[in-house]
Image (cartoon, rainbow, N blue to C red):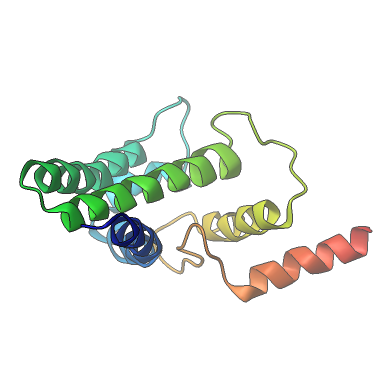
Length: 157
């Protein structure tokens, strides 16, 4: 597989993962696996949550794609695995570090994108049960959240 094609498959997979994440979050995490996700909406003391198990749910297919793709020289499959891994890294940085600040590295950013994803996620978490949720995506959020943050910035300027 040529280098440019390999990188293209990685990037396409990365972007497709946002849709898969939205669907998984909406219909699985807020569906039949709510018992794993519930403590994320109704926090309890401690650093770890049952919700952290979803890391493995996404890591296993990624690892299998990379391992089997490289082992059997199915480089498109390996590229898919790398795309899933890259998305997982972005998800970790955005969700765990920037939004929930489990690590206090970006606690006072005035960046419009960061403020927008934080606001969208806050709107998601205002629903403490598995029903009536909104904003199930992670890296791309609806236009209404961008408009809200931009209006707030103009008001506070």
